[in-house]
Length: 179
Image (tube, rainbow, N blue to C red):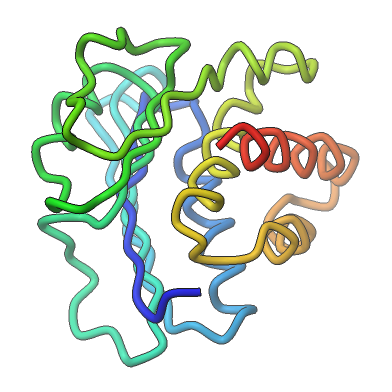
């Protein structure tokens, strides 16, 4: 596992960007990392733009702001247009192939082009696309073990939605295996 990792996760409101950001931050803390999580919402919540930044580090984090992220998870075209140019030179991006045309992806960037929505649909719920994408990110970056993130689901998903933990864990694994 690297000592430092940052990621900007972005999509439309309602795609679960904040949930996977919270999940990653929780898992990072449980693995002993210093963590920051910064959510950013557009003018409208559901349907508007949403993104968050998560930083994981073995050392104290000097600033939670990330200008050139090491990695991104982009779930829609507006997010790709906004964050792909900011990605650091040797960065990695997870791109939702279900909603983003391949010709928009910069071929000079290490990319996992994953049909997250399609895979989530096959798992039984299109709302799992965020977990599929996060699973792919875990494999691409090796920032945290898959099992650590799956275990953290129990502390991030509310008790009344506990029945969704197994399907979310399966979606993480499907994305991880794809990448």
